[in-house]
Structure formats: C-alpha cells, structure tokens
Image (cartoon, rainbow, N blue to C red; front, top):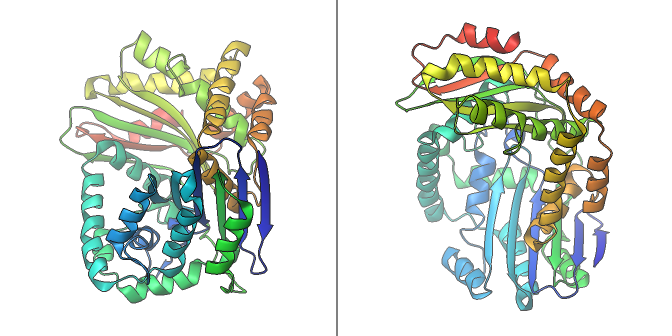
Length: 424
C-alpha cells in the first residue's frame, strides 16, 4: 500500500493510495463548495445552485452526451455518482481495475468540460423539482430540514441543500457557468485515486484536464454561520410525531470533536446505547431513537432523533432530557469502550472499500489540508477518556439554546412547552 500526494503549480492536489492485489479502482474529485457558499443577498440568490451544478455535470461534455457517459461507466463494470453537502461537492466512480485510467479521464472530463446543454437543463430542472417534492413527502428528511432551519436561521446552514423550488425553476445556463467559474478553481479542488491505480497516470490526467486552470487570487469563502436554536412544529397527516432535538455542537477542528463523537455514540449510537435501552427497551416510547454529532468548519450540533405518538410525546421529551443529563455524569469504562469500538469499526470497515477510501482522501485534503489515515483517527479515538467524553457532552448540552423540530400530528403541541422541557 503506497500513498502519494502531488500539488500542481496551480495548487490542485492530486493524491493516490495504490493497493497491491486490488481488483477495483476508485476515483474522486472533491470541490470546496456547497450550500454554505451560495450567496443570497439583495438581488443575488444562488440557493440550490451547488446541487444543480452537480446534477448538470453528468449531462454531457464536448466529447460525450449524457447517455454515452452512462454507457461508458456501465461498460467499465462500475458506478458513478456525486453528492452535495453544505460544505463540499464530491464526484466519485468505482470500476474494474483494467479501466482505472479510462474512468479517471472520464470523471475529469465531466468536471472540467461539462457543456451544460440548455435542453438537458430544462429536463434536469424538472428532475430536481421532483427530488424536492419527494424530499417534502419524506417525514424523516423534512423534520431534519426544519431542524437545520431553526438551528442556524436564515444562513446557508439553515437552508435546504436542494434549494427553493421557485429558484431552481428559474436557473439558466449562464447562472451555472458563472457559478462554476467562481468556485471550481484548482486551489479549492482535490483529485484522489485508490486501489489498482497508478499515481503517475492519475497525475497525468489531472495535469491534462486541469493544469492550465488558474485559481482566483481572492477565492470565495463560506458564509459565516452561527448556531441560534429555536422551536418549530409543523402539522402533517402522519401517524407519529417526528422529533429532532439539538444543542450547539463542535466544529470539526475542535479538540473535543472526537470526544463528542464518542459521547453521541454511547448516548444513542446502537442497541446498547442509553437512549435505545431507556426509550425503546425499557419504556416502549419509540421504535426508532438515536443521537448524532455533526461538525462543520466553524460550528456543529449534537442532536437526538425519535418518532413517537402524541400520547407519548410528553414522556418522551422528559426521558430524552433525563438520559442526556445523566450521561454526562455516569459514563462507565465498558460503555466508553463499546462506543469507541463502534466508531473504530466504521473506520476499519471503510478501509475495505476503495470507494470509501478515495472519498475519504479527497475530502480530508480539503478539510484538513492533508490525509488523516485510519491509524491516526483510531489513535485519536483510543485516546478519548471518560472525562473527555463527559466534558464534550456537557459543553454541548449547556452552551446554548436548544433546537426543537417536531413534524406530524402536532396540533396540541405547545412550542414554548417543548422549549422549556429541553432548556431545563
């Protein structure tokens, strides 16, 4: 296994991890742009443009149209996809090893040379509008949108990555071209390959497609976001109330970031977790209950999720609060070890997939400026003590106004009472 990193003269980072005996090759291109880079100010409204650009990248280049791109990847026995988050856009492909160079060339072509055909744009607008409608019809998705909106208010982190339907419907080819030029710059991109790959071949592809691109001297920066908190209920014809509760978490670079991941895992990360045992097994208040810790560049959230009936909502909210507060004071060595092992297994299992490795490398180069190996992350998890996890949990639970989002048959639910429950 050999890891190599080369930075081109224009600051584009190209990395590879070649693996002896690998039967697949994976390639990823990560761009430091997401929903929180979208400007919404006065007459400017870029909401949802990162996501639309990601869709349009697959709709044809100067060499191949959308169908030919799809057929090419299928012929390589592989798969190709992309996703947009609040902070990044990632394009990735995984193919049989004999097609490594061909796949790398095609993925680079998609990102560097998309033509953004007007006819394809008209069709893709409708596809994204259908995606938004599907998202709105999914209670699990919608309640997290409400949660983000209340946690971060009228900032990019508080808005849907998909964008508002009326704005999505109005985007033109000129909008997409201008946004690409503004953000898809070599200094804000990384290319990674893993598995049966050659660093020299990957580097040559990167140089061929992106070597002549120049980075802006003053690149656009992510819009600053501040955790705000608040409460929102939305009436919807459902059998259950979908509930998400959150507190100010920690930025991804905070010294307590990994301790908070451990705390969230022992709190609600598995069948032996405190929330699962108390809420589901002991009290039968919910079928699904969990906890999560999300970190961004400068902020984060510690959150809880559960679905329950209106009749059980009051008891559920009280139980959630009790479990969280109690957990900061009574962590045991055994549950600390269980939580660490759950997190470590995710890291180790990802090492068994070239697709996971390549996305990991590409994103790490953007987030940390370097590749954090599995061994390094496991070492950081192993170093977390009971005191560390308790401190991180207490920081989150006591450092700001809670966020509460409830969706479903909530007509009798009082926002102020919900806030009072979790602020106590």
